Image (tube, rainbow, N blue to C red; front, side, top):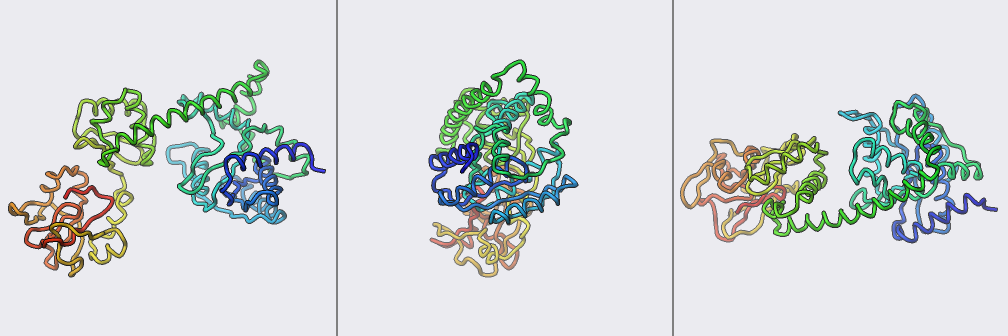
Length: 437
C-alpha cells in the first residue's frame, strides 16, 4: 500500500507536470544526496511508469568538504539501485569577490546550464523559499530578491529550472523519507551558523515562529503576491525594451529619455542583465543615467565584466577581455579564406564590392597609418571609422582586408577601396560589428 505522504507528493508532482511541464520529457534531477533531493528523485522514479518522462541525475562535486568523495559514491550507489543514469561533474569553486556559498552556487548552476535536458529539476522546498525571502530582505534586495524562487524559470534557450517541491515543508519531506525508508547524507556545513542562511534556519526563524505562529503562511502568501507583481513589471520592462530597439539600431537613448525615471533605471539594469555584464551599484547606475539625460558623449558605466559607453545616441559594450567580445580577434592576422571558413567573415553582394572573395587577401587589424582610397581621395582608415560614428575603443580593433602588398582594399562592414571596387561586387561583413556602409 502506498503511504499517504508518498502518494500526496507524487500526485502533486504529476499535476504540476501535466499543467506546466507537459512536453518536457527529459528531466535531470540536481542530486546532492541530501534529504530533499533524494525524496525528489525517488518520487520522480515512481512516476516513470505513469508519465512519459526520462529521468537522470546530476551530482556536482564541489570539492569543498572532506566528505565530498563519499557523497559522490552515495549518489552513485543510490542511482544504480534505482536504475537512474547519473552524471558526476567536478567543479573548481573560485571566490572572485564573493562568498563561498555564492561561488559554489554559480559553479553548480553553470553545470545545470550545460545540461541537454528539457528541465533541470531541483528540490528546493517551502522552508528554502522562506529563508530566501529573508536573505533578500536582510541584504537589502529589491522585488526580485524578495520574490525568492519561481517554480519554473528559463535556464537556457532550451532548458528550464523546475522546483516542484516549493509547496512542501522540510518536515513533510522528512515524513516522506521515513515512510519510504529512504537513506540520505547530512552535509556537515549545514550546522555552521557562520553562514547567514544556516543562522536563519537554526536560530532566527525558530525564534520568530514562536512569536508569529503563522509566519510561514504569511511569508508564502507575500512571496506569491510579489512574484505576481514582478511578472507584471517584467512584462512592462520587456515592452519598453522592444520599443527602444524597434528601429533595429540598438538601445536608442533618445527614446529612452522619454521614459519615467524608474523605467529608465530599469532599462539600464535590463541592458546589463541581457548582456551578462554583472550587477551595478545603485550610485553608479544613477550617475550614468544622469549623464545620459545630459547627452554627455563618452559617458561610461563600469560594470563587473565590461564598460558601457554612450556614443552617437547609443550604448556600446566594451568588454575588459577583447577576445571574449570578438572571438575572431585572436586569430588575426589570418587569410580571408580561413576567416570565412570559420564563419566569422561573410561576403554579400553590394553595389560596389571586391571582384573576388579570396585572391590571397589577409584580414588584420587597422593601424594608425593605414589608408584607403575612396571616391573623394585617400583617407586614413581610423578617420573613416570616426566619421562613420564608430566609437574609439572599437576603432582600435577594427579589421580590414589587405591585398598581397599589405595595402587596405576594404574596411569590413564599412567600405571597399574605390580603385578595387566593381559593380555588384563582394562586400566583407562581420555580424558582431556595426554596419556602416
